[in-house]
Length: 407
Image 1: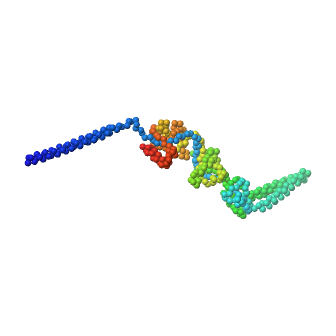
Image 2: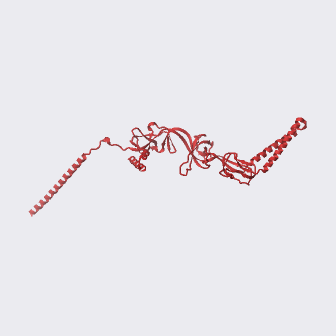
Image 3: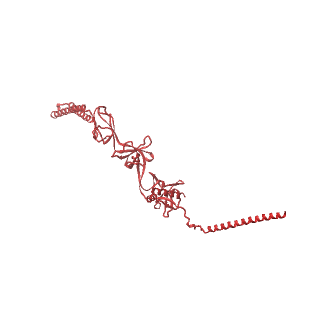
């Protein structure tokens, strides 16, 4: 029994010794491997601190120069004729004929007429008879007065003063009636007082026309007026004679803006209308008749012309309530400066003062800049133009730029 017990103790002791040897061997192997790895890592030296470079911000810039800039105030208005005329006969009668257009057709809406052109005429038989009668009376009265003058010359006492004055009065009255008859006959023909376009015709041949009954409506449109309402706060800046540019709101069939029309301020109202606005008229030449009454247009009235710098309005950055720009200095670093007097106009930022060293203005990538950051200038237009695959290059460059900026 004692022998068996000693045998079990010996086996157990041998097992423990074996486990201990295995453990020690594993530790030695691990230490050896670890030492090798440390040695390998120790062979790789960290780079010197002066070779660590911060990422550059990729930006686009615009080299700006001073130019003459028109400062404009823009207002929308309605095209109106220069003048509008309502024509009527001064005498009643039967409408005998209408004037004709260049094709020989009776005048109607849309026809152009010239100053002095016949538009319509009444039947003149009655008026011609009245004129003949008035002429005969005038001739008789003038003859009687001439005879009285001869009598007074040979024998002053042969006629009383009353008889002589009656003869004079009769002659004067006959002359007046003759003048009226001539005028009535002239008024039986309606003529255009100006070069114009017919906008309305109210009568037909054969109609009985009353005195002062409207017959034609004429519009003077060789020049037209763009009439806009100006608020009280701005009307003092508008003066007669200022240049203006008119832009029709309607585009051409391809969706392109139509060319602007150059005009001048023609008139400024002295009093406000019922809306509280002051009407301002801009006179525009219209030789081709393209500008028609009722069209809507924008008037850009030039209130001043200054030396200034024109920038995209998107170039400005607003931070902490301040409006500022970034420019690139000679060391290719971004620098910020606060804007002075500026004016936003038609998508542009008009800057009055810009020192020479600040004229390489950042217009893309400026929103992620800080003062003093290194930048890399990226010219998107040049990169796309020089690359074989323009669209692909532009997309790749833009993506790369945005990735760098995001860092």
